[in-house]
Length: 223
Image 1 (cartoon, one colour):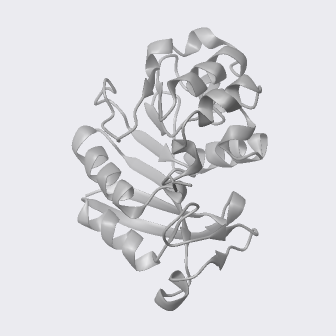
Image 2 (cartoon, helix red, strand yellow):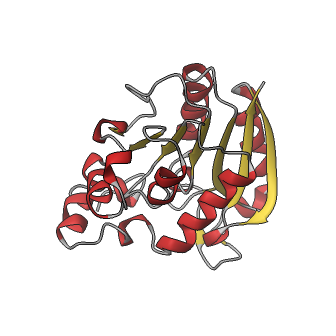
């Protein structure tokens, strides 16, 4: 059986899950807990209603259903590998769908961020790079730094291995998730995450707090 870079890249993964009504489960469960954690992180980093937020890997709007009511209308943008998944979230998870224009949901498989305006001030990629090889993080960082001159902060999460020797083997994270070096969910070394971030034009603050599933938060600020 072919190994895909993540379960989300397997043929018909989204279609099958959506047909079963699993638009919440498809993004890893802990729907409300994780959405609240994401929103709290953004508020801690100074997100205000008049800011413009880009939710990278937005899925079925787990964060969006909390961020859209907080932000000024039209100030939330979302990208995901699956446009259908975002549209399902838009249809059933928003208290007031009119606050989020449907054309703010952008299907994007390669971090090109098509049609996203350069007014974005804050961006978050929660549990995105935990399911992709490190070269995807490099590409995303470079694209974000280039595309969004008004960006104030980028928040993203990773799984870490404690040291180089351990990184070659499966690592059990504090929350029980087992991560790997060459298949999803992926772990990285802290030094590699910091290098990719700083080489892409950001200052990097790797936070010690553990998030749902044992992820680590990195706050990147454009230089």
